[in-house]
Length: 25
Image: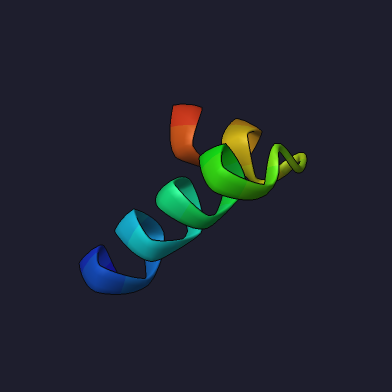
């Protein structure tokens, strides 16, 4: 799930959603 995690991180940062928290994990 490396690709998905990276995508979620970028998506979160771009959208400023809570997804950023997932990136911290």
